Length: 384
Image (cartoon, rainbow, N blue to C red; front, side, top):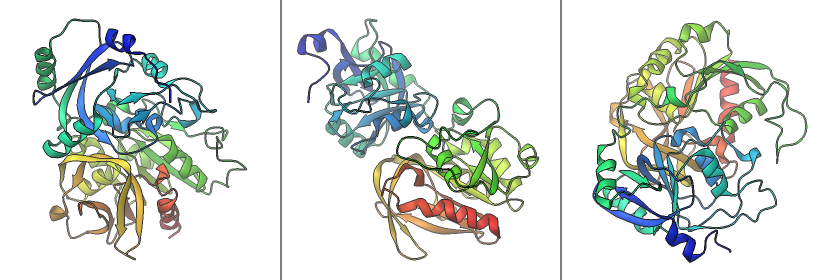
């Protein structure tokens, strides 16, 4: 594989990633020549960096890829998961030139165009081990021409507010309601051919940072999807007379998204509800559960999750820093899925009302199609 920079260029583009505990990793800039703060996390996926960068759930995070060779597949419009890149920064070991037939732009060019700093040449395995031992850490990427000492970079990492208690859903959400893919061009894309199924159901999807592949899967399951901004009150949602309401994934602390928790309370029992990731946490909070911050989160496409109803195991894609506290679940909720790596809650359902939610991402094709049945479950729930 050919790397994007020779040694002279690497020396000329020196950069740092400084952590709040005082650790500094040296590397070289391969993205925008700017600085950024964020929570440093690691993703264990060997592929999918474009989907990661364009997933709004990564807003506020500096993403470390554990796989060493990144960039070979380039960037293309068909694989975007949202309207833009949302990660605060990107940390990798080796950056390779794009050499895939589907590539329309190199990763480095796309990062620069998006204004997102990235640092290569980092020992990402060492950084990952540090994060596993200490937990996620606040960090500061220094890629700008400004002369900053390592001590100054560490101080900037420590000064950042962090993600706890922060509402990022309203920052990444759409600002106006819209109907997803009226002409089918965004759903019938690369790898998906033929005609769309008849849309027999009309649903409303809350955009807390919704991924386009969730919208594609909902439409491919026979649903028209009206997308609404994160702060939309429940009364406004019910005016659409939906057959069901979907609560999406999104970034940061679910407990801080108080307006969405209230909406969940008001919608429960009035319309079938499904949630994914942040939506799972919000619906659990609406029912009276509590959430907490995980040590280093779940970020990757290889997490085994057991369905407690039939003991089957799905290989799942995940991206979350917070979880639902199993000891706080109210009597109205039943745990349906458990993470086999750490026994955290991965799914719940309401015992008397039409509502279920999962922590993982069934739309991300991790298994590659293990959890597709969940969209069918949502459809079945609307048939009752």
